[in-house]
Image (tube, rainbow over all chains, first blue to last red):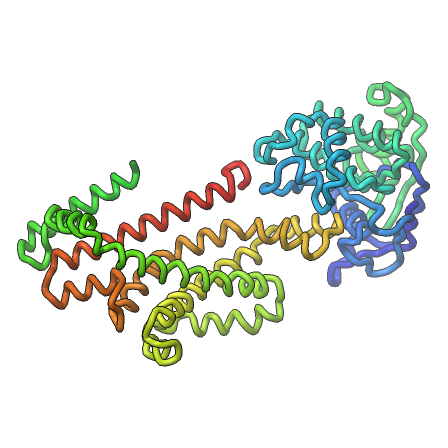
Length: 231
Length: 242
């Protein structure tokens, strides 16, 4: 679904990240965890085609339009109503699907509101609906829950996990939260500016009680160690 | 209500000044308003008002018709910006009114030269305001457009246009005052209708009450235009959509 070969992104003389390679199968859910400044966001932007790769290659199965990026900030257009925001760039034929997605994220009744009338969590849900309405084969999430409170964050994580699994979407989530990486990813990658430094599969991904499962804590501990933090 | 308060403040100043000067050059407001009322009832002022309104509206429309695409292009295309922005800065401070004789030779002494003068004067601040609006547009929205594969037409209609729309209204508000004062000057030459003409005509005939009635009317016309611009803006851009 996604093949990245020895990729590098430079801003002038500064290298955001280099020597990054990754192969993602269809329907795979991958978390990329790393410290701030390790080039996580640059990586996603490069995959989405927003910034050019300085070196290496990135290929998306089904072409570049088969991927959808959900930004860290909701980036809803303030002058468009919720439904129009979801349908950004699409024709009236996608209205029905947009409405069903809004209903799915629990905002069916707010389709005629403006973004300024919504809470932060609601806005991020609209942004989620907007990234799903294009029926992407590859969904890129750039820490979309960073600004949300814990309850809202956990509910949204669950909603996305369920939807992505149901529709066989390939997921690539970048985050600095180890807990989030463990909850969302069946494969977890630790990223540094010099490329991938650690990779592991997540045996607890399917567990219902993954958030409070003590076995999963050992994985979190290992990741914390790999990130150079305290045990 | 807030307009009434402003009106009372102006009235108070006016009375104080009239009292201080106590000569025909500054008549009392009530005398002027009585004259204005008579003029309005006798219907001979409407033609002047209509002519002025017509010149201002067509002049503004003409200016925006050129300023909107020009501001958009200069704001979006860096190479154009490098060439045209300094050109605009160079031409903007020229006293365009001084070129009224040139306009009269080129476009005749009728309405057209007055309308084009107003348009040329409004064009500069309007273009620069719109250019700045385009430049200051959050790049996040353009990234969004790119990530969701919007066509350049969709970028224009869904992102750039709505984000500069408030700028167009503020440029209108800025230019209403300018265009009214330009209108006055242009109507003092080779005109037989218009508020500028009535003011100057009364001045020449030493009819100061009539002159002030014309000035009051010009100011009311400005107020009316401001109110219309505000109302249209509220209609086009609801408060929740900002």
